[in-house]
Length: 360
Image 1 (cartoon, rainbow, N blue to C red):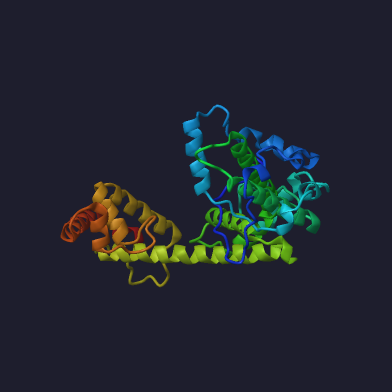
Image 2 (cartoon, rainbow, N blue to C red; image 1 turned 45 degrees about the vertical axis):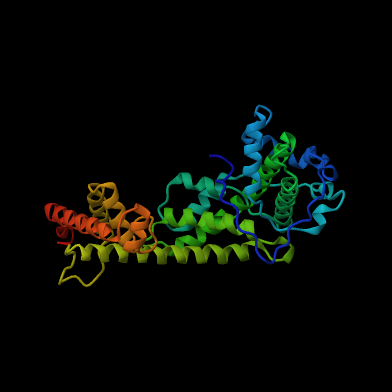
C-alpha cells in the first residue's frame, strides 16, 4: 500500500488570498538548491519523491521550451505568507523536528470495527496513520505552503525563450515535497472521513463511493485551509466532508429520478399497483444494467443523443436539440430524427428483454 494518496487538481486562488511578491530579476532569486532543502527534516521526503521527478537534463531545448510554457500555464495555488520571503525563513521552518509517529496496524483495524459496516480488511490500511498533535499539524501546513510559495516564485521567473533546467527541477521538486507534506495531513485524517461518510450509507449510496468522494473532499480541504487563523483542521474538514457527502447523496437521488423518468418516456412500464415502496436496490441495479446494455446497441450518435437528452451517465444536465446539433455539426431537425430513431430502437429492445418483468 503506497504511503501517499492520489494527487488532485490544484484549487483556484481565493480572492482573500494574496500571492507572494515576485522577484523582479532571476539574479535576485537564483536557480540553485537552497540550503534548507538539505535539512534533515526534509531527508525522508526528498528520498521518497526522488523517483517521481522529471529528468530535464536529457531534454532538448525545444522540449524545454514546451515544458516551460506548460508550467507557466499551470497555476501553483497556496496560502501565501509574507514571512515566507524573509531571509532565513527556510531554516526556521525546517528547524524543528516533526517527529511523526509510525503507522500502526491496530489503528486501522479499530477504525474498521468502529465503522459498523462490513468492510474489506484492506481498507484498514488507510487508517493506520496516528492523529497529529496540534503543533505537528501546524508545521505540516506551514511547510506545505512555504514550499508551494517558493515554487511559485521560481515559476514566475521562467522564460520560454531561455528555459532553465535547474529552475524547472527546483519547481518540480518543491511541488512534490509540498504534496508529501499534504499527504501526511490527509492520511492522519482519513479516520475522520470514515466516521462521517458511514452515516450517509444506505441501500442507494454505497460506502465505497462515499469514501472515495470523501477523500477527494478532504484533499481539497487541506489545500484550502489557512493554518494561520488558529483553528484546528479537523473542525474545518468535518464541515467540508459532511457537505460533500450530502451533495453526493442528493446527486445520486437526482440521477436515479432522471433515469426512471427516461424509462417512462420510453414507455417501459416499471410500475406495480400493489407496490408501496421504491424499487429495491437489487432490481434497480438490474434495471440500470439492462438499460446500459440497450444503449450500447445504439450507434455512437444515437447513444450520445439519448444520454444527453435524458441526462444519463456523465451528463449532469439535459441538453437541447440545438446544442446537440451544434456539437454534431448537423441540423436541429436531423438530431430530432436521430433521437426518434434511437427511441424506437430502445422500445423494441425493451419489448424483447421484457424489462417490465424486473418488478414483477
